[in-house]
Every structure is written in C-alpha cells, then in structure tokens.
Length: 158
Image (tube, rainbow, N blue to C red; front, side, top):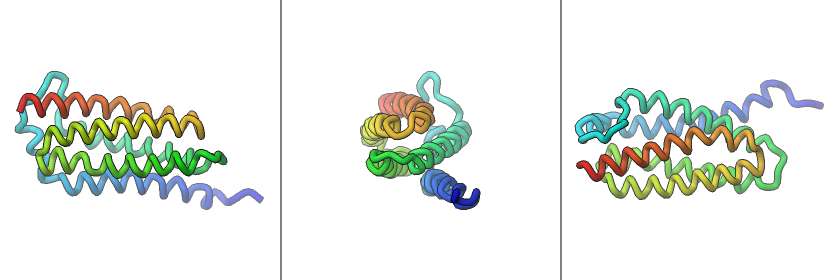
C-alpha cells in the first residue's frame, strides 16, 4: 500500500523547515548588524544589501528540496550524505555571525573556505544518491563562491 500524500509530503515540509529555519535564525541573530555591510568599502560587483535575504531564501528552499530528495532515495549512501548536509548547514549558520555580528572578516573568509569544501563534498555525496539533488546544490555553490569573493575583498579593503 502506498503512503498517503500527507505522509509523503511531511518529510519535505520538515526538510524545508530545517533549511529555512537555519537561515532564518541566522538572519535573526545578525539583523541588527547588517548595517555594517553598507559601511564597508565595497568591491566591484558588490550587490545591494537587500539582495542577500532574497537569494539566501531561494537557496535554502533549494537546499531543503535537495535534502528531501536524498532522504527519500533508497540508497546506502544517503545517511553519510545527509550528515555532511547537516554539518555544512551548521557551518553555514555560523558564517554570518562571524562576518556580520562579530566583524571578523578574515576568520569569516577562512570559515567560508571550509563551507565551500563541505558544499563540494556534499554535492559529490548527493550525486551518488540522487543526481537531481546534487544539481539543486549548484546555485548554492556558485553563490557561496561569490560570497567568498565578497568576503575576501571586503576584508582586504577594510
């Protein structure tokens, strides 16, 4: 017997709540310190501050869907893939605190390098379980690379 639509939908809802909740809590903890970003000397290609929450919301939705696809896959590698997902999500949570809240620009950059390595590792593991899940992580990887450029440039300019 096939599970009901509600039972099949619940893991997706939980996955989205985890990813969006992580991003939302991080944003909540840094909301009063986002003004600092505007006060830094900006590098070329620096987007306006309002764009960050829009892009990150889309990325956290994609992360949640991607994790759901891995969770639902019947693959022996899904457990390891999901553990790396959780670890990278925790590392992602800390980065805005380092950069925006504490103003630790260079340590935040090196933390972002760690995050990038974890994202690549996660994508590789996700691909083995669900190629679609891995592809959904590509925008996250690209945006985080761009964030690395911004972080390093701001650290060097300020």
